Length: 375
Image 1: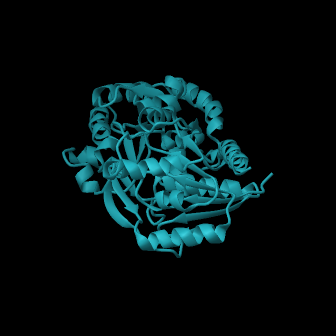
Image 2 (image 1 turned 180 degrees about the vertical axis):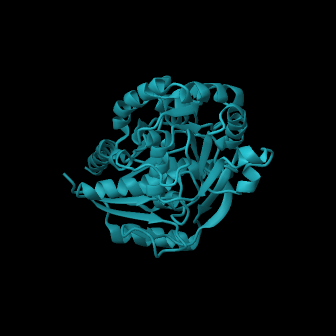
Image 3 (image 1 turned 90 degrees about the vertical axis):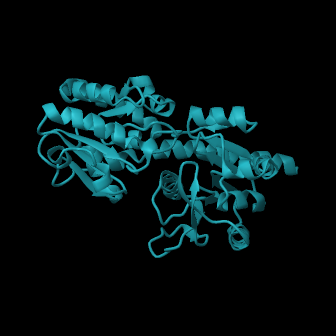
């Protein structure tokens, strides 16, 4: 039964899409649908298009952070906004995401008077906060009532590097939304491979996929590559001959509906990431859309694909192995269907209603533990 007042805090700006922001928005919507009272505090500069449940936490500053660019909010003004939000919310529990990131989540941990649950999304052992001061990081960790890790790899970091355990609860995916997606309108004729992510960021592995696609394209004149994400298309195809480059289609930043349509419409989705991933959100989205998945064998992806039972794997960083495995899957529709059939069952464990129920169990345990301590 939905009866909790829940505050959720994002460290990253809601102006720019990202995995953590999508996770928080989906979790909030699922909890609201279950009858809970939910407020999300997040950095935001442009506030007009924010969901009704999001409270702007102030302008964010773009800074290099953990191998990418993060938009964070910190300082006295942000701290004042967090205090006001906590006071007005009268929450039963506050759920912060990435509490060791120097932004609103960290401030909320140090401000909230109710139990605080934290979700750790990354499996990176270094952070700006840890580097700046172990005392501050320890203070944040000591103020947490419960911890959640989105994967076994992220949980391992908790145990080995942060001095505590965590409940493993994966990222959720709205399975029904992807299941009903119609294939992308205007998709090129012939077999298609899909890729989604910041293709100018080396750890996303687009350069490996580009090399593999160039090899595949020689023998497959009707093969196309669809790319969703931000970046410079001209730079991304530099080095390819003009005919091959013409078969790489850049869709730019797309809506959730267009993303679902792309995933539902391609014959094979490829995730060539080289590391730095604690989960594989796009893999679960592709599985929910009914598309065969091929991914590098980094630990997080192996876990999401059940060790290769529900999707293909290739050695990380090997364009040659990627091309060979992609060719095998493109040439064997029956093999792709087998993967999809197994994935259809497997992906249910990531469906948001099930994931949110597990999160609420952690909330209630933290609230009860707090009541026991007060008694």
